[in-house]
Amino acid sequence: MASPAELNVSTLQSPDLEKRRKVLLDVYEEVYRERLGDPFFSTPRYWERLQGYASRQGFAISIGEAGGTPIGYALGYTLPAGSGWWRGLSSDVSKDELHEDGHRTFALTEIMVRESWRRRGFARRLHDELLANRKEDRATLLVLPDNTPATTAYASWGWQKLGELKPFDDSPTYDAMVVSLPIAS
Image (cartoon, rainbow, N blue to C red; front, side, top):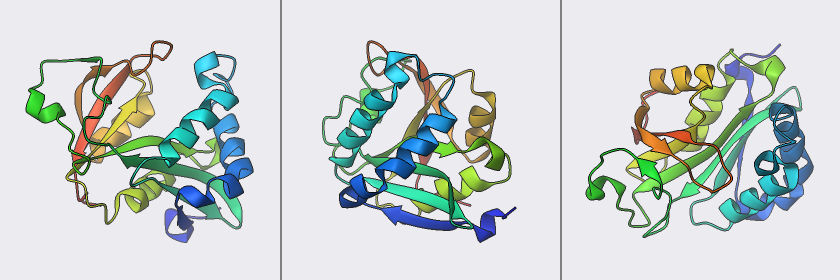
């Protein structure tokens, strides 16, 4: 099996989304197979969210392939001025910390790696490729609090918990994390 150094990573922009739909959804359905029965995690709902993200300024996806096989991807976009991203945050944070001007924060909305490729550095490589050369001051992400492997990895990569956040009425409550950019890898 390949090492993270042997991973071929390509970064796609919004116009490429539809061309890679099957690959993106195949990875999503494998990674989230145990949650697909929940309407929030259903494939159609995910594709709807993904199309919404793709319409945003600064949208990008980094897809990793090893030996021609897609093993995972990371994606995100720049939070727009006045973004509602922080609505529902339950922590005592200053309003200045939550102010978005359309250039300040990159929202890393997904990192997915197929199960047989996990715990070997591929998620970190996708993370680093996506965040490399970003112009924003910081990045944010949401992670399920019980996803111990992810929360442990993010903390080791320099991410800090800002608070808990429930982004949609039908979504779970997540830990909201932030990291300063550029990242040190």
